Amino acid sequence: MQLEDLQALDRRNVVGSYARLPLQIVRGAGSWVWDQDGKQYLDLFCGISVTNLGHCHPRVVEAIRDQAQTLIHASNLFYTEPGIRLAERLSASSLGGKVIFGNSGAEAIEAAIKCARRAKPGGSVVSLEGAFHGRTYGALSATHQEAKQAPFAPLVPGFKVAAATADSIERAVGPQTAALLIEPIQGEAGVHVIPTDVLQAARAACDRHGAALIFDEIQTGMGRTGSLWAYQQSDVVPDAMTTAKALGGGLPIGALITGERLQDALQAGDHGSTFAAGPLVASAALAALDVTDDPELIFRVNELGEHLRERLAALPGVSDVRGRGLMVGFDLEQGDAPGFVERALSEQQLLLNATGPSTVRLLPPLTIDDAEMAEGITRIATALAGHKPG
Ligand SMILES: *Cc1c(COP(=O)(O)O)cnc(C)c1O
Image (cartoon, rainbow, N blue to C red):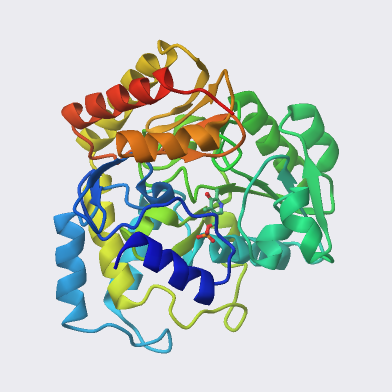
């Protein structure tokens, strides 16, 4: 189908909740996607850090194909091996407690909130200014952005906001706090790294008041920032963390991974989900973890990330390059990031993302090779040279 016809069909039939870019993607392989005419695009966005291993990674495809021919669904009323083995892998690779699964990032956040409130009944949930935790009511209530929250009031009670400073966190967290929710690097806000001293203050405040420190690693996890989990780059260990996006190798899955302290907070009957960690998605996630949890791949993510940030910082018109590993953001001195991203798409066949009026975000595949990275940087430089806002 041609793009114009698909756009008309979309307008008539799909609720208009997305501002889509004018590209139909029909196929993907590695760092590349193709449109209906066979035109090839370099993907430095990875579907918001979902296809971290590139499109249709052979190990993920093989795991999905094998499992699809064996058993697709059974429900959580029975035992199936892939989901339980996945829980073991996730726990052993991080906080050492138990895991509860859902089908998305927002659902992992819901599980986190329920888990923390079960541990401290009636307690409040503190999250940070600029944070994004998802669109369901609990997750939205922790996402303190006027434009996202206001149309849907009243929200869930008991949610509070703090600025991303030690002072503000110390004031917001008290004896009635059940959870403090933090993205170690705020992704949707434009790739803002929360400084280590702020994370340390958060840990201390939670310890002082018996609150759960929960990291939202839905975007930062699965190798994206140059370690399997972002928290591993600081000395701050949360009581629980959420993961989703890249976990399923492209299939939908979310998880709350707890440490020892919260591992038995939720009990039989407290929470559940029909699809959660079914055999198909769990097999894909095990394959994705096999490929991602590899010191060589992680080492390359750091090297490539450093190189990318250096090269971006040297480009005229670029300021404040930031991020860790291959989670990278920068500002355009002339603004109009959405216009820049659209022109990079139409003129350079390059997939990027604008998180705000002047911020561009890059989430390249962790498997990108040197030549593809060089090509990406060249295309960004060319797009920048022609960037004339308004
Ligand atoms: C994407 C994201 C979410 C929400 O995940 P969904 O799968 O869209 O529900 C929550 N937190 C962070 C940090 C995210 O990046």
